[in-house]
Image (cartoon, rainbow, N blue to C red):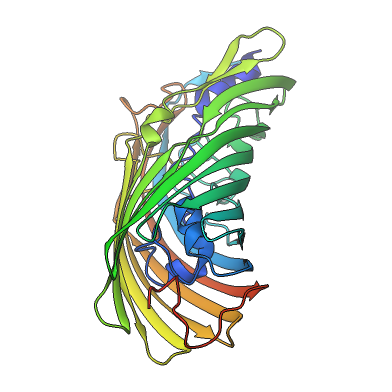
Length: 430
């Protein structure tokens, strides 16, 4: 059991701000400003299901494809405690080996389907990956006793029903079916050669979504959307050189609330805004327990603050078929200096985006979005007082440099309706 203790005492699994906002090529081009209001893209149903009532006649289908290319490097120094760790008397060496680029490129797909049943009733289905994380530093880098690789994946299926009360007010409700899986690796410090200890598990959980849109006057729309947290009881294993043990861990993803506004300035120009709150503080410190005995073998110290996101954007119809857009955002990370870890060195970020849409014909359209994300200067100080600190192992002090490039493209197709050029577009409102 002493080898298992070496893993547990040396690592605190920090998943960080692991939500994936990249669910729409259309809204990517405005840094997700106005994503809870109706528009040509039905991808807004991810954040506010009531926007499904802006879908056109018949069926509408969209497929969104996003490539995330992060560049994250951690440079710092590990200072050993100098203690001889049992049972082999291992003394850890000091190290300043850099992490290399810990960010893994990621492909994020999303799809949306809407069907207008009557003038008031709409059905929809959203399939997304709302949470994810993939980091992989060099195997024997300086911070290996606090983290090696981290991986989290999710798949969320969200059927929706929307009701258009009148031309001003719409409401909707949805159910979430979510699969969530996690795998965390850390160097075991008290075994020669420092093999990886692995904690992994997965589960299927359930949640809800809800939303409302309101148009107080012509050309103005306000949307309020909600995505509940999803409770997971992860079943899996903890693997060390001493063996493999079956474990459980209770984890709840954060719920999210957003308020979005769309304002038509002219027939060709619209401005958008969004404020988003994410309840990261509810994660707290879940326990990992052995399935056989119920004994706690590890505590996952999250202890995050809540996250906030503020976005402003606009779009302009260059022609009847071509629309250009741009936007910027500021994101307040749920991870601050006091708890920042080597597993996910998250910090406040600035988003800058641009995008375009092209209507090939009345039924087929394409969207393209690009975003550059710049992270603020990020320090890491795992020492006395830090929730990850293990005095038997040592301290890690360093800095992380991070930036992200994101490219996204989507296709939208509609069939079974009767709308023709020159009629009023219910999504744009003119």
